[in-house]
Length: 87
Image (tube, rainbow, N blue to C red; front, top):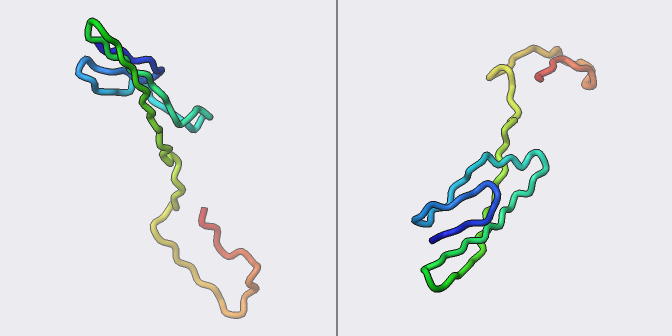
């Protein structure tokens, strides 16, 4: 018999760990889970800890509206004047 103690992950009878919820560390949750796994053979029980590290994904990558931009600038123009806003 195999047992697992950890929120959001579970273990199959053949020992495969899998997620039971979507982890979102953007909301301040920890990016590390520590699960305790216990195996019982009828006479003896052994336990071990497994650490699961959740890696952040950039879900809001910056992007430009257009693939390219082209405009003309006259010579001797004031360098501090805005001539085009990209985003």
